[in-house]
Length: 176
Image (tube, rainbow, N blue to C red; front, top):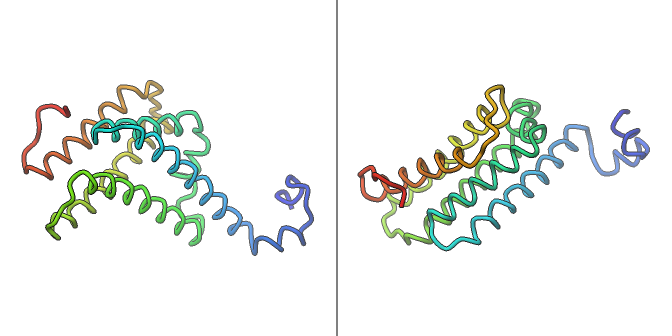
């Protein structure tokens, strides 16, 4: 009732579009996540070098989470376990972000080895999980760090260092 009242529509109109409030929530999550992913992709694609693409994408994501803390809190924390439809959207978002990282790195490398390609998939999934964990604790959580520039640079060093390790089985001294 609160939803239809706030939206200024009837219950009948609401149910013409959604079977439940959970379905509405899942649709809203999907739209929000697509918007965030598009902004991150756009920021990263403006850059030429992979290290710069990573930094631009990370910085954009952190800025979105910083400036939209309640939305980020909802997407990354509060929505966990709400229902199966929302969990599926959260999972798809994680996969889409990982696929973006994978595609970006793969375009730089053009790997021919299937084992390395699999490692690259795992690397991409791990980077999304690690970045989201930092966002939860340092940007939107209790331990809020509002200066995202050094945080973005640190995360970029971690991502780029991990990438170099994956490529060479050695840990680089610098990200550049």
